[in-house]
Length: 320
Image 1 (cartoon, one colour):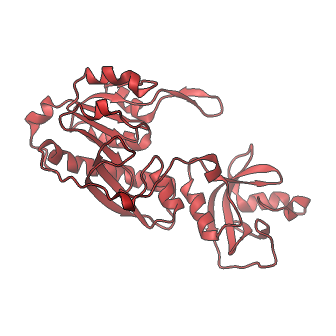
Image 2 (cartoon, one colour; image 1 turned 30 degrees about the horizontal axis):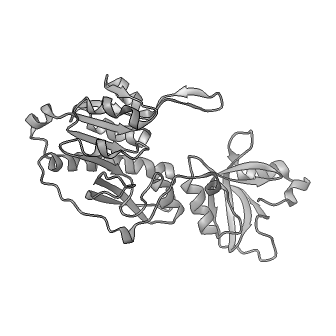
Image 3 (cartoon, one colour; image 1 turned 45 degrees about the horizontal axis):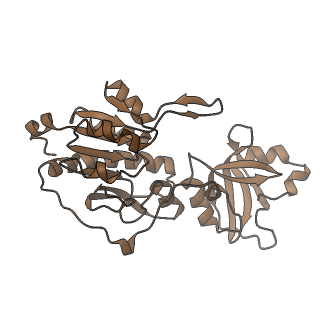
């Protein structure tokens, strides 16, 4: 990596915009190599059962390094404050909002974004979840110029990564955050030297990784075992896939598929209790719920759950 142009870097005013842990990993990679003038992140929000106010991960990193932190409730309300810093370059990474034209047009070196997919595939706010849910076998990171559209800007660089059969949204998130950090550091010198490539996206090839909604979390046992398996791991560790059993919510965190078939059973019906889980009939076979979390309880194995309802009428009920 070429980090020779120290004179440019000393004079450079960079503003970093991001919010979640993914973005915090990328920010940490920049620190020590580039001076970040300010961080813009989402406001603190209540979280957890106690509704305690918690700060975004990017803010924690910024405070640890005494970096000016801006948290406008509405980005448009913070534009004047951002522009007053006279940014030469704005870097965004999972900030959560589209930048207005006034910001996009200001920096000398533009506004660039670290996006967790191989654009134009999976534009949008949940590309990591959707890559697994959709059954992708590979994904990656793209460094791009921002535009007024959602992840539609010209591409600067990209790098692929394989999605393992057992990857969850959490494990893939961790891999991609490191990939994004490293790719950004590799790409920045060419941007600052005006030697980078710039490739328009093919909109005809675009797909979308929209933010996860509540209906995306609900398991449909009339679906195929592969689709359900991908859904469960694509929502682990947040927000989690769920179903109902005996009228109560069951979160499902881990599962696996078998080659068993049960044509005489209804979808959602318990097939068998295994040493490591509870089997459930689906449209084309069986999925074993390995780690679940009944409403109001801690996570447990599917086997422990099954043992708790053995010899009870509930054993004959179905997952819905």
